[in-house]
Each structure stands twice: as structure tokens, then as C-alpha cells.
Length: 210
Length: 210
Length: 210
Image (cartoon, rainbow over all chains, first blue to last red; front, side, top):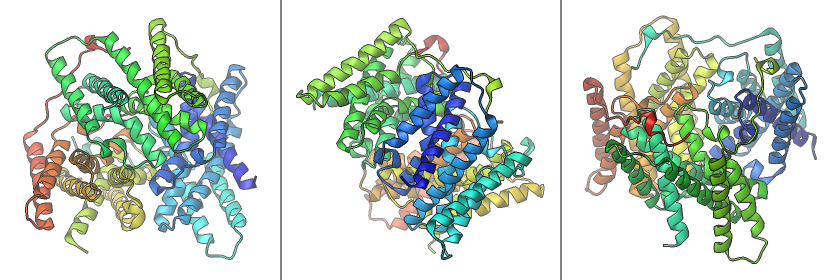
């Protein structure tokens, strides 16, 4: 098992935990918790593979992914039932790490398909954030990533950097490590200093539809 | 026409009716009623086929599916316009039957692709419930199946049973009949005695994001 | 560059603008504006291609689509920042034109796959309207097209007409032009005289689920 595969599974577990916690805030039943956890963890990669036509998708090829997401969801419910406190800071850091790993994976997969740069970046961002967007849509929330501190922007920068570094004579592992560190650093800085993109406020007197 | 194909079309019609009724509760126009009916009836199978890479999807291969869903939607609108009462119990039983049939179909299709057991069960559940989830998301509701009495759990049990029975020297029709009866029985028992999975309540003081 | 390709890019730009404006009404950040714009512009065609198994999808094959959608989104934000008024009537007409073009493209692509008429019409309508539906779902609104004046109905008529005219000895360009004009005319008439489909109101005393 390579270190990168271990990182991947860690990302799956963390994303599943954030999904299970959101389902808990919506008072879903245990099936709902499991579904939201799996979709949050594997939805981004599945969407990427379906759009690329990359079959079979990861969790069909390898059932460890579903197993890890399921265990993470069950573990989360047990943890909260035992009234253990949730370490918010630790979870945010873990989520940032998972985001970094997923972004690199998504960009890699897309480049292997020989897609243009714009599509490879979109695939990287999609792999990182689409699971969370699906989680928020199913839970009837406007997706957090369109509002809160810099999140997807870290993916965009990481994905472009990954593509750019392919031009240099670096080992793949080195490029991967640099990009993971970069996304992680940007995201942690954004959390620490509440960095956010400017918002686009459109008043209703500018309405364009009825 | 085999008996199983007739069951399949019956399931499509019933799911289309539940979609049309939901659209009516949201006061949609006739196009909206038709779209929600078709998505409820065929969305689960379409999602399964797209994730599996199983092309062409059922309603492209065979246009009877769209025809049946359309007729069911139009029939529902006419029925309500004529102020006929809706037989709630009958509809719930019919829906449970459609759920059972769709679960078996989804598991069968996935097994034909040689996927692992975890993915086959997910495909069975997805075929049974994803259309209803799409209906609820488009209608801006948190999907019912994550809240109400046992529903998807019946699919999970039915799908595992279907896979397990493949190991026995039974005729495919017998296995299919057993699994349909099992899902139906669990679902009807859940409705009758209001059986529900425990819920996962997470209070806001346990919040993990901002 | 053919005139039809120019029309296609024009439709992408217009749909991206409507997406950016909706994101602005939800006070999203700049990343959110960009995502909603791209999904509104390219979501319908992507869904169609994924369901047909038509890989690679348009914006992966040709990165001009992403570029045009991005420029349209950025341009919209700048325009509103400079407090220029939005020409509502112009935007509605442009949107109707984009709808007409996308409907014809979707029907064409589906016919090239040899699908039945019902599926070809669904693909035409899907290409025209699904991007807007995704925009509304992500922004937590019940999709506008299920409520407001005739919109998708124009696509349905245009798509059936396109298919029917294939039987006549007309040049493809002529058929395309006729269908674009037809969809545009129906949609503009609907806007001008507030034509709408009848709605299906279902009172709660008719409820069929719990």
C-alpha cells in the first residue's frame, strides 16, 4: 500500500465524517447518515469519473472505499452517542488535508485522459468539492463552499500548480507532495485569518427575470 | 412479455404517480408534473446505468418506459381533476411493490457487471430509492427516505438476500420472487407498525464547522 | 467557424450570464458565481452526453466553452460593479435564443445516436433546460421552469418539429433555422402575453403519503 493510497483512504474517512455530522444536524435516521456520508466521501470522484467516462468508478473497482466510508459514519454516530466532544480544529485540518489529496487525484486522473488544462483543473476542483456540494444540496442548504472562507480557490491553485510542475524534471511523488502542502497551507491560512473571496451582491432592483 | 417485465412497468407507473402527486402539492404546471413523474420513475435506474457505464440506458433502448410514465402522470392529473379521492393505502402498497421490483432489477444489473457485493447492494438500493430522492430535491424537500419509516432498509435486506441466494441451486425466478416478497413484507410491516430506524440528533453545541 | 457554432457559443454566454446573476442574488462569492455560471451554461449538454454515453463531453473536447462561460461570468460581475443597469428585455430575448439553439443541438446529438423519438425529444429539452434547473437547485429554489410562463413547452414543440422535418427533403441548415425561429417565436409570445400552462394544484386533504 503506497503512502498516497493511505492518504486517499484518510480523505474518504474525513469527508464521510463531515457528511455524517451534517446528517446528524438534520436529525436523519441511520440510513440517511450512511448515505450522506458515502455521497460526501465518494460523490466528487464519482461525478468526475462519470463525466470522463472512466469506468468502473473507484468504489466499484475497489470495495475498500465503501468500507472505509461506512466505518467512518458508524464511528461518528457512536462517538457522538458516547457524548464525546468533536474536535473542531482537528476536523477542519483533516478536512483540508483530504481536500488537498482529492484535488491532486482528480487532476491526475484527468491528465491521464489527455484533457485540456481548463478541464483538468475543473476535474481537480470537482473531485475535491463536489461531494460536499451534494451533501449540502440533499440537506437543503445552499452549498457552504459558495459562501465561506477560501476553499475551492485552494483547489484551483493546487490543480494549476500540479499541471505546471509536470513541465519540470521532478519525480511524481515530489510534485504530489508539493501540491498537497500548498493546498493545505492556503486552506489553513484561510481558516486562521478568515480569508474570503469578495462576494457578488445583486440587489433586487437589478432583477433580470420575474 | 414476461411477468417480470410487467412488474417493472407497474413499478414505473406507480413511481410516476407519486412524482405527479408531489408536483401537484407544489402547484407545478403540467410540464413540471411530467418531468417530476419521469424523473421519479426512471431517475434511479438512469443513475445506476450512468455510474455503471451501462449504455444505452433503459428508456433510450425501449421507449415504452417513457410512454408508461407519461400516461401515469396524465392519468393522475385527470383523476384528481375529476375530484376522485386518492386511495392512500393502495398507493403505499403499490409503491412498496415497485420498490421491491426496482431493488431486484438494480442488483441483477450490477451483478451482471461483476461488481463487488457492496457496490451491487448500493446499485440495488439506488435503483429503488434514487428517483424519489431526486423528486424531493427538485421539490426543495429534504428527502423523505432519510426521515420516515423503514424504506431503504428494506431494499438493503432484499438486495443482500438476492446476492446470497445466488449461491443456492434455485431458479432465477424463484430467487426473484422470494426477494420481492421479502422487501414487500418488510416495507408493509414498517408502514403498519410505524417502524423506523433510530435517528441521529446532533445538537448545535457540537458543531464542527462554521 | 460556422454560423451555428457561433450561435452555440452565444447561448453558452447568455446562460452563463443568467447563472452569474442568480448567484449574485444569493450573495455568493466569486468562485460560486463562476461555478453557477458554468453549470448553467454547460450542465444541460453535459447531462445529455453522460446519459447518452457520448464521451468526451463538449467542454472537455473543446476548451472554448469553459473560456466563454468564464468570460461571461466575469463580465457580468464587472458590469454590475460598474452599476450599469441590466437590460431585462434584452436578456430574456437572448435567453430565448440560447434555449432555441440548445434544443436543436440536443435533438441533433440524440438523433445521431439513433435513439427513439421520445428519447430524442427528452434530450433536446434536457439540453435546453437542465442547466437552469441545476442552477435553481443549487441555489435552493424550486426550478423556475416548472412554474413560470411557457418555457420547456417551446423546446418540446421545437424538438418534435426538428425530428418531423427530417422526413422532408430540406437542407439541414434550413431545418435548423426553422426550428430556432419556432422556439424563439413561442417563447417570445409567452413572455409578451404571459402565456402559461395550467397548474396542477393538489390540496393537502388529498395527501397520499405521510
